[in-house]
Image (cartoon, rainbow, N blue to C red; front, side, top):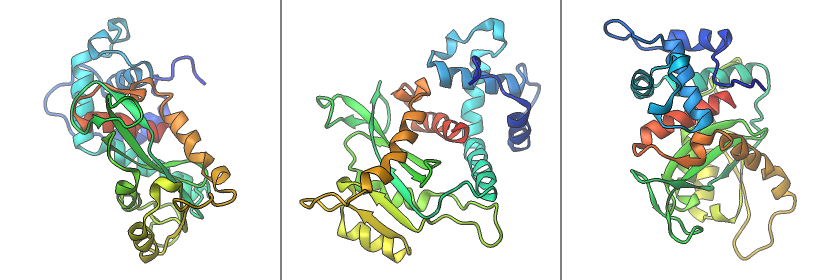
Length: 253
């Protein structure tokens, strides 16, 4: 891995440039430098005003550009393009998908609530669905006290249509793997209605044999996601800005 992971290489720049929304007037800081500033904050978790001036990012321009690009859907579009490239190469495993929802600390803002695992301290939660190889497909940010099962269908329905192969874009896995936190008759029914086989352990019964090994990929994905220091503790009070970092991190993964 590069010792300077915030540096935008030519390949990434070539993908992003066509997606950039038009900007009125002159740009005091180039888009590529602003993107590097965003990546710098994502990797190092520093305040915007502490961005090193000698690197030419420009804290105000970089923060403003993050918000504007998120509103334009740039990071979600980038994630979808990269998923299509993986799908075209046969590197997405649609035979199964995994869901999970660990907690993260929060410094205040929207979509927060008392954490049931951290002495009811205010926090948020990342709900994630990934394919059978651990590629992140969709992440939803909620308050820490939102039950995992309450966001199961939102995760499944939130998977973007992934092109890259002949025929219609795909957005449904063959099966969905979950632990007992996702046990619900209503959810099982809705998954089957979507032609998805629910492989979910039942409360009060032994775990499905071998399910833990199959679900390990989602734990690995969360480890990768939270290696981006900005995502380990949520600083953004506005959920949309936090989700911008999350979408960009998913694309990088």
